[in-house]
Image (cartoon, rainbow, N blue to C red; front, side, top):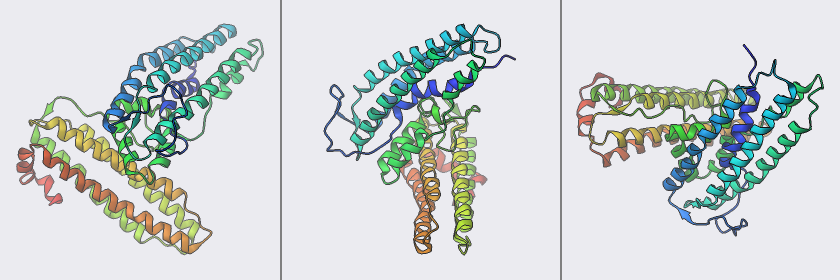
Length: 377
């Protein structure tokens, strides 16, 4: 099997797509628009996400073409000069595509939420940074000596990245802003969009690195409603039980050794995050119940599951930020962290309440007779 230029796929994807969505930095809604020609129109958040997703999904053919071009390269046997030219051509193509993407994004406006301008401006700041990085990569590839015996190693070296992911940066903005968390959840509810938007957060197996998933699409086509209800109840009852047990484990944490306690608390919140990802998978796999409002019901639950992932994504970040130098401050921070479990239950309750706007009479009827639902009563 010939080697594939796998290292290159991550930066190319990130530089052409994911960097559009990397929020790094701050700002406020009263900040003057420092980018001439950039739309400052306030856009309803759901519409803004849809517009951004249209841009992201629209670039997939270009990404597929870049990957196809890379797959044609035989790094073990091709002439080094041909390899150099092919890689440079892909990078230059990525640069041109990004220019088009940026021009489209400039017309989208900003989400009409608190810190909406900060979100938009952070994207714009990141564009310049990433475009400069892509230019550096092009210059690096073109400047190599193909006759050097270290050519391939030198070619790959700058493509290995280990920095902040898109979700890391989004979580910073979302930490104290429910509306930004809702934006994240809205992206994740559209699996095709999320796979591209968060592509820089993925490992080779397609799983995100614990930073939200966007992995499981809502299954189209109606499925048996009784089976859907049984699956729904099983998924939510199991998840609720898991959270109760993890909450109890957190409450009983031994804090006499703060360093050990910190490690244990991080592990608890990572487990809660992973259980939330599993719930998201289970909800996505249910399909659409065969009722009039089945699509809306399924989509509502998928957004709710993504919001739960976002809650514990942020909690993991906060747990990792715990410091052990001051015992009193440590305990206060842990006390604040425990409220994340209540936030999760509140989110579950809110998602059920939101279903009231739809025709769920058949779901309600079945939930009273399906054995799997008894645990939710």
